[in-house]
Image: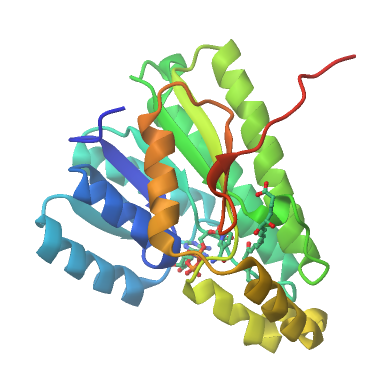
Length: 261
Ligand SMILES: NC(=O)C1=CN([C@@H]2O[C@H](COP(=O)(O)OP(=O)(O)OC[C@H]3O[C@@H](n4cnc5c(N)ncnc54)[C@H](O)[C@@H]3O)[C@@H](O)[C@H]2O)C=CC1
Ligand SMILES: CCCCCC(=O)/C=C/C=C/C=C/C=C/[C@@H](O)[C@@H](O)CCCC(=O)O
């Protein structure tokens, strides 16, 4: 998919990985709608983007992705503003073992909802022109963390859901490619949650073990995740692909045995 003139919606786009991805899309002449609940970070981000890429190319929509009506409205406003939708990146995520119900809502339920909304606005089934959806999981979906059981569960869920709906898209000829990206540790504000007892809950006492894992696995730059994201968007052959990004192997793909009885 050539990026110039394409319209992307990025959840959690105001900072961290989402912001890096949105910047890379704008750099490649796409238009971007940032959907994020952090008003201050969103406004700050859009000010920078307007200065760097021109004021007609990005839009900030304040929205909590767990609010289904607001998320629905964010998709609608994006299409009204830019005239269409080509790319959806379901990236918003949190690390909160204390409020684990919220973690499931943000990291998994909202990704499912964002995928269905993406299909509603892009699928040939709905008379639209097709597109691409990328859901953000984590290497935690392959190397589980004993100190983040619910975060881990949500990231396993995102991989399973994405692979299944991608196959549905192919069978039903939606014209939408759906893929999942699994980064290892990335240098973003999310990592600060390790030092927050109110987020780590009973696992707070293990924070130094997580930091030890980080020192072993290393910490990636958000720009490398953006590079992986653009690779998925540009490669029209990818559907149901599971991209992993680690310090040891860089950008690579998980392979699966074909299903047998
Ligand atoms: N930073 C890391 O080490 C890794 C992050 N990931 C995943 O990457 C994704 C992005 O994470 P980061 O950029 O690192 O985090 P971050 O905390 O830096 O940014 C997340 C963004 O999502 C927004 N957000 C959170 N909850 C929201 C909600 N309910 N509604 C709307 N927006 C919401 C935040 O306001 C923020 O702008 C997440 O899904 C995370 O699980 C995956 C692997 C590693
Ligand atoms: C505590 C803050 C939130 C958690 C953020 C998150 O999702 C982090 C996940 C980190 C996992 C890192 C794993 C890295 C592993 C690799 O370096 C490598 O050893 C794995 C090899 C397997 C492969 O196929 O690449």
